[in-house]
Length: 111
Length: 114
Image 1 (tube, each protein chain N blue to C red):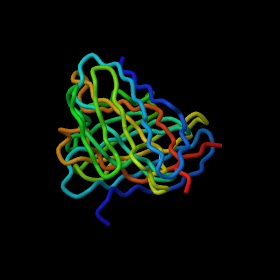
Image 2: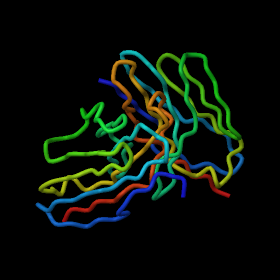
Image 3: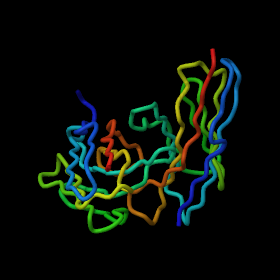
């Protein structure tokens, strides 16, 4: 059974204080790993797809990396508007199209 | 708007009642998904449609849950004999062909069963 574990559950940063969020996963075969952002009362919003170990993707202050066991979402010099819950999900190569999500990391960036 | 639309945004019902939740996907998206999200948890897969047919319904928790997409566009999630444990946010998502995990989610329907 696919499993996704995210840590920490919650993270508070000062504006400009860089940090990383962790996503550990277990799948029989990885089709893709996905990062989403979710604001309160909204649906998740797609950020990145990573397909193979060593791959990196960047968008503004966010950079996602992937190894064979985990993914990191690095946040450089965050701003208050980066406050949200960040969700990691995996797609197993054997399980059609469903995504298995972790419970998320709730990020708060203080001004 | 051009996004995924879900109605109602909020639904309060009594235990044992029947509920329908509607999803209108992005125009041209052939793949449609239903997920359920409980407080403090990530979304949990329920069912995936490719066109009109349910390609994967392995996430439906029991036979009280059923979903249709008769014309390959709008989908309805139907819950019979609701239970308090069904309380959650039901999220609908769509994607162009279902070939990637890049999903476009609606804002969800919050279901509360009293």
